[in-house]
Length: 383
Image: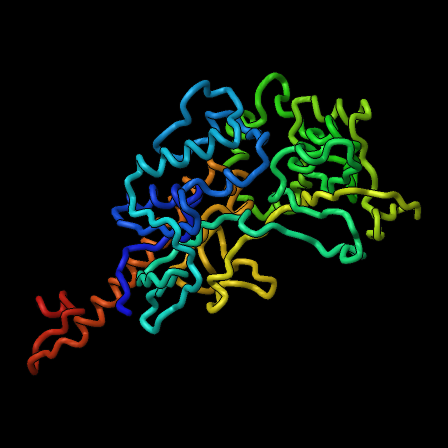
């Protein structure tokens, strides 16, 4: 099969892929964007229905096109999905949906070959993996789960509280999604939040201003200290006051993480057992980068080896949308555009160096007549 050529292949057409396509177009490239789903809306349509962003609309947009409406409001899941679809249409890039990338190979001349499940074959000097950090739900192994007779689902499978009314539910996790889901379910079910440490609360509007305003004004939002954030983040729960108040009022409770499943429930840290109907795992996500498995791009645990989004092991490969890739905002809608611009810039520098090397190699291989001056010595020739 003959491969189609492209300036750049971008894997993923969610917020990271669309932000990358915008940056590539601005750099004079014509990218091809490959998306596994039927539409360019990222993960947003697959989150729980009540999800709201923690950042106001003014801090939740891709480059070149703000979110419509009140810039101070907190957009919903459906608003973000609709915004990404509209942004993709406005961008007018070559976006190909229902094209799941199964393999990226590095060829002998350092070009990449990209293959999709449907058999599409592309060849390009650069690839950006823009599937982000939320492509693969993380499900930790919990003792006794195989014998548990109730239901265990990840939050990626949870949509609404329907079906949980009157049931005993445990939500595992201490982050934003865990608290939001526990609070919502507690209106119809008896709910406990199971965590390994107390909830780390972060006020959404300290001193009357949204926290993102403070991050922006202080420079912390864009500061290139992503690795430091990884160590210091502590998974805070952003709260306008209602979630903490609900927990304090006993709408739901928090308990230390249970030690194991039993056939009909769980065993708590104090040794007591309790019947449980359902467990919801709000245990986060990991990058979905299986298509890079045949390259040196990934570490032993499947993690991307990079510095600020540029691969340290595969020249020409970049990443956009990874959590704390470069800064606090890297995995957010507002952060993918600036990160993509930097990654594209660094890949473009490699392109110029590669062209310069090829040019020098071409000149050095040009035959010279006996006694003719070397083209590398213009001053000596002139004398």
